[in-house]
Length: 353
Image 1 (cartoon, rainbow, N blue to C red):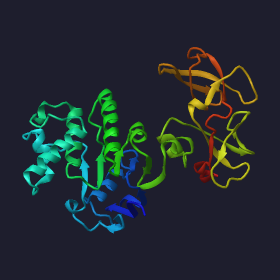
Image 2 (cartoon, one colour):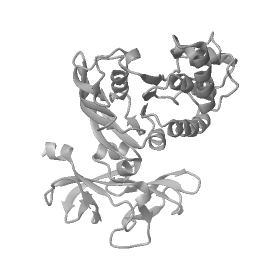
Image 3 (cartoon, rainbow, N blue to C red):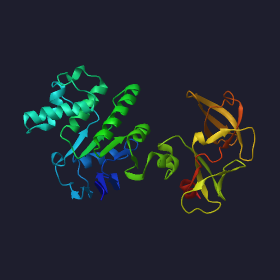
């Protein structure tokens, strides 16, 4: 039995469908990241799980028990809000102890001390909130969520208010805390790297529908559809027609290989997805495509290049090689055996036929 079971969750706001029949499971000790762009429904799903919104349809079970009719305080969940929701007029101890009302004073002190130690803030009990850095405030918010020893931890964009350098350091610490405590965790984020770092599995949402659930590796290497391919990393989505085990690219005299998703017919309009790092600059070869280098972004040990063919097809390539400056000619081909491309039906082209 799954620790957490979300079954067919649906939600509308007026005519707007925010969630459409979303089902997810969470194992004990697992972290699930809800990933998607703004408006995908991920925050609404978290609020329904927390009890701040009610689903129009569906059920929520924790260890087999229905909890969707329970008030938020009775669900036994801990939550870290996007803006932390700390009380600036209270010190760290009072903030962390806020959810411990009704417990004996000695127990409150013990739980606060233990929670702050878990987030490396031992000795900060008397610090005013306003004297803490953004990363420290975030850890106080996590400590407050952990102090009541919840059975489920909910994180709503917990790192979005931090600058990039601090976000990375705080993300590593948050990852350590979650793993050390072992509480099942649901995380909402729109950042792919954050989802991949923190999530044992990642659930991708788009327009209220669940697109794919899997490990970071599965989503990146075997995306279920073009949206997932483009959202969890950079992707070339190239139009063409199915030709054997590959795609005859539109406007190009080559057939690039890929793995088919679904039942496809020879000659059918399709999309071929290739990651930029699965391509290479070559001198020649049967799969080589010639184009003009139109852009280069230096990334340190490698660069990202944009190549445009004579027919207007644009192809991104990530490579440590230097094929030349923008305006020069280059030849591109897939690397043998590296992240094979995915092939899907090109529904937009089919609909125009």
